Amino acid sequence: MTAQVRGVAAPTRAQVPAGTLRTDRWWLLPAATTVGLLTFVVYGGFRAFQQQYFFADERYLTPFYSPCVSLGCASEPGSAHFGMFLPDHPLIPYAALSLPFLLVFRLTCYYYRKAYYRSVWIAPAACAVPEPHAKYTGETRFPLILQNAHRYLFYLTVIISLINTYDAIVAFRHPDDGFVVGIGNVVLLANVVLLWCYTLSCHSCRHVMGGRLTHFSKHPVRYRIWTWISALNTRHATFAWITLGTLVVTDLYVLLVASGTITDLRLVG
Image 1 (spheres, rainbow, N blue to C red):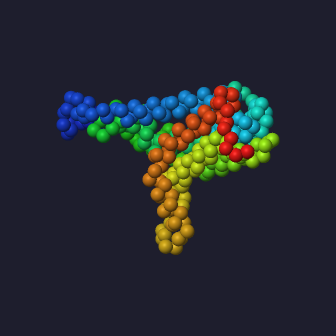
Image 2 (image 1 turned 60 degrees about the vertical axis):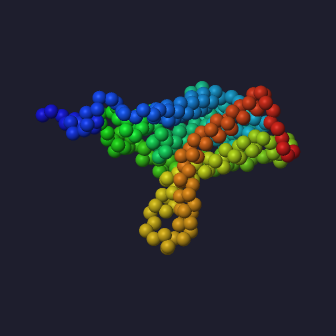
Image 3 (image 1 turned 90 degrees about the horizontal axis):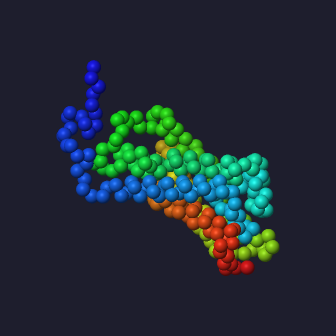
C-alpha cells in the first residue's frame, strides 16, 4: 500500500513549485528570535561556569549565581546567604540548585515554546511558509510531552524568585557602612520586579488562581487576583524578552563592579 502524501505535497493541494509565494522578508522575525535566544544562552552559559566576578561591593549578588551554595562561594565572603554545601568543581555552577530549574521553566514556557518552535524548529517559520518536517505529533510524545512539566516548575520558580527578592533586599545593607543605596541596588531591584512580572504573568499562575473555578461569584478574592494576572498575561511575551535583557544587564553590572572596571555610584550612604 502506498503511503498517503499529506501537507503541501498532497495531490488535493494546488501544485505550486515555489516553497512559498510570500515576497516580504518573513524570515527576519524567526532569524532575530534565534539570534536573541542564542545570544542569551551563550552569555548565560559562559557566566554560569566562569565562577568569578559574581559578588560586588560586598553586597551585590548576580542572579546567575543565586543562591550561591557552592563551597567555591567562600572566595567571596557574604555571597552565600543560604550556606555552602555543593562541591566546588569547574563543571558545577555555583547556583546549580536553581539554574537547571529556571532553564527548564523558560524552555517549557508557553511563549518560549512558540518562539523556538517557529524560529529554531521551523514548525512553521511563518504563515504560508511550509515546514520541512514530514509529520507532526504535537506534544503527545517524548520528548515534547515533557513540556507539561511547566505547570509544576512554576512553584519552584516562585521560590527562586523569592530568593532573588531576598538578595535584592539584603543588598541595601553594606557590612561596614550600614544602609546604603547605590546604582546596583536600583539595577537589582528593577530586575526583581520585572522577574516577578514575568513569573506572575505565566499561564500556569493564571490557571492556579482561577483555572479550576466553576463559579467566579463564589470566589471573589481569587477572581480579583485572576483578573489582575490575566491582565499581566497579555504582556507575558513582552516580559519574557525584557527579563532576558535585565538578567544580562544586572549580571553585567555586577561583573563590571566586581572586576573593578567601574565603580558603583552611591545615591545614599
